[in-house]
Amino acid sequence: MNLLYFVWDADPVMFQIGEHGIRWYGLLLAVGFLLGYIVLGRIMKHEGYEQKQTDKFAICIILGCVIGLRLGHCFFYNPGYYLSHPLEILKVWEGGLASHGGAIGILIAIWLYSRRSKMPYFEAIDKTAVVVPLAGAFVRVGNFINSEILGVPTTLPWGVKFMRNWEDLDNAYVAANGACPDLNVDCLSDYMVARHPTQLYEAFFYIAMFFVFFLIYSKCVKGWKHGTFLGWFLIVLFGFRFLIEYTKTEQAEFIWNAPITMGQLLSIPFVIFGIVLVVRQYWKKGKTEPVANTTKDKK
Image (cartoon, rainbow, N blue to C red; front, side, top):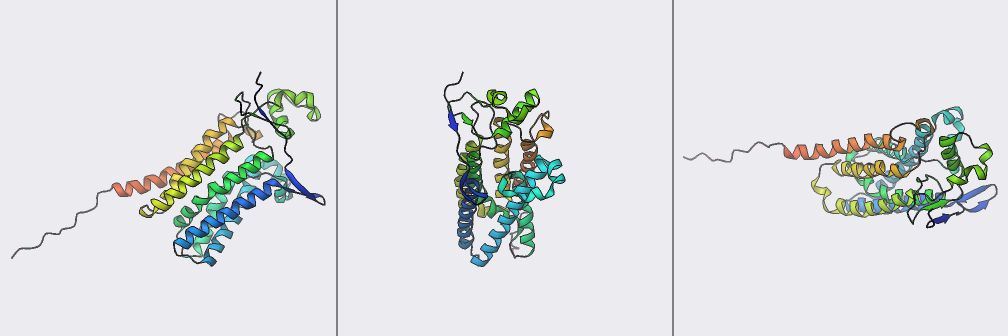
């Protein structure tokens, strides 16, 4: 029996306004976007862009990210329900965001932006990639406060017992034993065990990734072809996302018996795309350039 663990029973709602609650998750998401905007603004100012262009670019990224996060959750993880109840898609305050959808939303939003600006597509994405891990870290802390995206059981001393997320506990029970009547406490007690705090694993990794990639962008990216920075970013980020899924419970009910999780399946195309971008940079450099004829005719 594991006697070393933390009990997490935090209220995800900061305070109530009428029938609606203001959640910590929303605050952390806003702080992540704000800090990302500040860093992006400094990068673009250093590169000679006007504040007006920075603002338009940031708004485009935020809209693409939020829309992609929500639609990704709805259609990657529970398409049947949301196609039957389309108005539920609009209820972002009830939770349910998918980072892979956010990545796709950002890629599409920047493509639309680049068509109306003088900024090349891959240059714009390289800048965005610098700040994405910073915002992602705050999102994962919000997930931890919400007691969502649970890890698999662990006996490690930093395991966490999440006391509030009955829905995920019920899903875990159903997967193993069949239906649990009316979320009965006795029925689910065996599943209220210490689990990996995967949300915090990701948050710490994203913070470290932000500082490392910010340094790389500041020192190295000038000599790279546009898109190479993005390539390394995708390989590292979604390579990590593939591995971290081994510490998570499955979130997509319709692929319980699949050899890999939905999160891993969605990560593979991003890693492949990143490899293509990196190979593109070094393959171009490796090609033999024609040697110019500098020999002068002698008279």
